[in-house]
Length: 498
Image (spheres, rainbow, N blue to C red):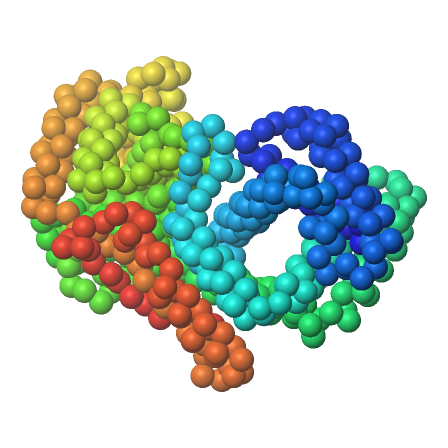
């Protein structure tokens, strides 16, 4: 078992990969850590060979009396460092699980401006503390705690070897002989250790297995529910044909104000919008679909934070805004977020009036053929004068596409008056947006509730209706993440059966 403790005792060193470069860790391990660990464990093995009755407390008995207390202090400090490594590793695993959508949303605090891996998760830190106290108070025996630790370490080594085999085959594409040699040597040693810890499962080794099973259940249920919710939102997106068929008023009463509809979709109109306008008789005069994305960078510059596009014709007054944040960018004040969003929205309107045609190609696929025909007609009627033809065509508005097809002889008149019309249109739309902003801003959040079908099996009902619903209830809400004001928050619920 000496080699096992040599290998596992260095895990604290590799927890510092986010603090130091890989080469520094490799040199420190090879030159300092590994020789010291080898000498220490070899000395303990020699001591046990002579004093076989001191197995329980061999470490402290093998220390000479003259250096007992200094070694005791160093050993205590080493235990603290090792616990810190376990905590850091847990934070990293939870962070990766969050990125893959396999764990409920928790608060992640980034403690470094340079290194993405230096994080702190308060909720997980409290859970680790409670588990440590429970294990220590429950066992009251260091041998059982050692059995639990040994079981966890051996299983981790076995799983790491199996994953390493996949990396060698799929990523590194090593020769099969090299993979076979590595697999044989590793599994011979690790399977021997694994067979030894099997006899210790009833003596404390069951604890890490139960904890791992609980976290596996949580991760699987959360991932299943999240995937089903996202698939429902993706497949239920509203087409532009349906939006355009409603007309400028969207078939409803357009009340004064701006509605900010928050969605996870960066393209298309979410199903929550159709659900909202189907059940309510009115919608705000201006609708902005807001999608917040977090990027793996420290911060996103203010001038690159918001991406604004128009949805539908101009008289629909519908926009999409993608807000991009780094891991150190925080929503400190919702008023500040609104101000920046509207500033970028007004800037987009000005630039659109200047460029005469800033559209979303995906959402205008319905009119793509008409756009090409009108563009060709303008080129033919102006003898190849590309600049004048493109200036006279506003492809972001359906009203400007259709006349270009029906009446090509009047294109020159449209070109002459395009500057005055765009300026007047820009002023009118900016005044309209300002008046709607003064009328009030409402934040609309979607709340898709996942439920199991009535004919589903009992374990699926338990997983979806109880476990996933409980995790959704205790995880961080979108209103907290976006820092939205509760007095102007509107939740739109819908039920989805799986």
